[in-house]
Each structure stands twice: as structure tokens, then as C-alpha cells.
Amino acid sequence: MAKSKTVYVCDECGAEHPKWMGRCGTCGAWESVKEFKQSPLKIKPGGNKAELKTLDNISRDGEYRICTGQSEFDSVLGGGLVKGSIILFGGQPGIGKSTLLLQLSGHMADAGHSILYFSGEESGEQLAMRADRLGVKADNLKFANDAVVENIASSISNLKPAVVIVDSIQTAYSESGENLPGSISQVRESAAQLLRVAKEMNVCIILVGHITKDGYLAGPKMLEHLVDTVLYLEGDRQSQVRLLRAAKNRFGSTAELGVYEMLREGLIPVENPAKLFLSQRHSDVSGTVVVTSQEGSRTFFLEVQALVAGASYGNPQRNVTGFDLRRLQMLLAVLERRVGFQLGTQDVFINVVSGLKIAEPAADLGVAIAIISSLKNTVVDASALIIGEIGLGGEVRNVGQIRRRVEEAKKLGFNRIILPHGEYKDLKDLGLTITPVRSVTEAVDEIF
Image (cartoon, rainbow, N blue to C red; front, side, top):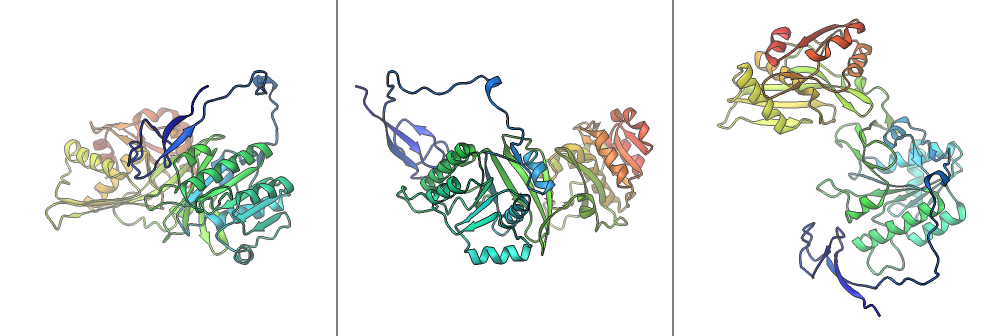
């Protein structure tokens, strides 16, 4: 007879170790490696077998997605909530997670979907007060101040809703568990039970997750592997702009970005982010240019500000907001070595005015021009849009989806486009003043 096997598993990341150790060698967590008895797999002759089907014999439900009533949220998900899926929705405290989910619940309930909202952090009175402020009133929306997983599963079985919201997974707990709510084992067990419920009852479950001080979702890392989709609501709490991203999405792209504005009425989707991001631009000031950032299928137009000043201390400062510091250092080296601008003794500050972080190299040329504009104290034409990646040789390289960027720029009223020379031929039919450049030096000569 096969004997049980002793295994040592990290309760934080799920990594298995050959022996017990005080610190997990995979995730570095202390006192997280536990001893478990692993029973041998028993196979009964003639027992039940898994029901296997070919792909052609699996039915497809044409209405497998639920529209949330907000185009921004639906586009990030890939078209709406998928039935039978489980979503982990994270963000900093006070960023607007519960507000946004309550708004979505109201929209879906108004459309005829049955919604259950379980809150382990707020009472029914608090939820009702927020619902009144947001104007959410729907008979298909049911609330409960309950965090017991067994009670949630029983309610789902009885009422058969379309969407269930659990706020939050850190407060949910199973009565069969021995640890306190919020512990790693309780979070993992609660999520596993809710995942089983979602698949068996074909209901979409949204789990609200807390964020640690490092910006990661609290709880075991395997929680992110367990769910189908991981969403983050980001933004500066001093700003009204909120950004919705998908870090993981089994049913769509992770490149899409949703933009919201926090107002008294709640989180309002921003259909045209350019009006919001460029509304307060001062075009008569040196060191400011407009660049593009492609996020999935959407093109964002962002103002980049640069300030160059003589260093007051021995080491010049390099400070950035919304841009990669290492990329800035590379651009400064190219400007000094290839173009001849002496920046080694200058403080350089870069600010992307929006709350967005530019992660693609298409803004390289715009950032470089903004730096030169501030250094020369010369204003760049406000109707000009600057696009291009800069190589180490000072050359301007092509970027992706250039036609989409230029077409969107034409709609916003940009008259002149500075872009890589290799992209010029395919854009002559747009009727814009297009200035193709091969290098940073050529771009500087054309603009200044």
C-alpha cells in the first residue's frame, strides 16, 4: 500500500521545497513554508471517468458576455463580463473601486440582469447612502453585509444572479477554515470556493482586492493565477483622472486602457481623453510639446513638459513624472554626443501632464524636442505633433500604427506632423503638412 508523502509548500507563493526552511527560496517570505501530508492518488477500477469532448462538440453560448453599460469598462475587458468568469479588481484605498462597481451594478440591473453585492467592509446603510449619491436605484440589485463564503454560495444557488460582487476578498472567509479572515489560507480557500461556484453556476464573480504599499495585490500570488482577469484602477489621489488597466485577461487584450474622471456623481467615463489631457495646455511656453501614446486600440495625445536649468549643486538632477528615467538618461546622452547640446551640467525635469505613464518609445523625439526647447527658451509650434523613436546613433526610427495616430491628430486639429522619414510615403493622402526627418539633428533644424 502506498504511503502518504510529506511535502513542504510555501503558503505565500505555493512553491514546493524538498525540506522545511525558515525562508522561502522562491518569494523570500519568512515563516511561510508549511508541512503537508500528501495522500497517494487512489484509482478505483471501474470508477467514474471525466466526460471528454472534442472542440466541435462543445456548445458555444452566443450571449456569453454581459454588457456593463460603460464602454470604457467593456473595452478593457474585451467586450464585457464573461459568464462563468472570476475577476480580481484591485486598487489603492479610496481610489474609487467600490464606487465604480456600484455604478456598474446599477447599469446592469437597469438592463435586466440580477446583481448580488456582498460587502464585508460596509454596512447596508453605508451602501445605501453611496447608492443615493450616485443615483443608483434598481430592483434587480440586492445587497448583503456578509462575508461568509458558504452564505454567498448559498445565495448564488438560490437566486441564480448574472453577476456577483464580493467586496473584498480579504474580508471573505470560510467557516470551515481555522485561521482568521484576511489570512493567506483564508483568502486562498475563499477564492478557490468562489471560483468553483462561478464555473459550476455560470455566474460572473468580481472580487475586490486590497493593494499593498508596494503596489501589488495583497494575499498569495497564486490568487492572480487562479482568476481569469486581473484589473487595476490607478491614479493619483490628488488628480481627478483614474485609469483602468487589465494586467491579465483570458478573454481579451491586456493592452486596452480605460479613462475615468472622478466627479461628485462618481467615476465618469472619458470618451475623448485628449480634451481632458490637453485642456489646460499653455502653448506659449517653451519646453512643452504634444506626443502620442498608443494603448491598445486607442491613441492618446499627451502634453510633455521639460524644464532645463543650471545645476545648483555638484550633481545635476534628473527627475521624471510619467516617463522612464533610464530612457531619459539615454536621450540626454544622445543629445549631447550626437547633436552637440551640453546637458551634463544642467538639471532636467520631465513631466507628462495627465497621470498616464508613457511606456512606448514613440514619444522619444517629442521629449528630446521639449528638452531642447527649454534649453534654448524657444516655443514649439502649438499645432505641431512630434512622433518618433530615437536610436543611439541619433537616428529617428519608425513607430507602430503611425497612420492611426496621424488620422486621430487630424481630427483634433493638428496641422503639422513631424515623424520618421520612412513613414512619409503612406501618409500623403491625408492632406496635412508632414515633415519627415531622418535624425534628431534634422528634426532640430526643421523645428527651430
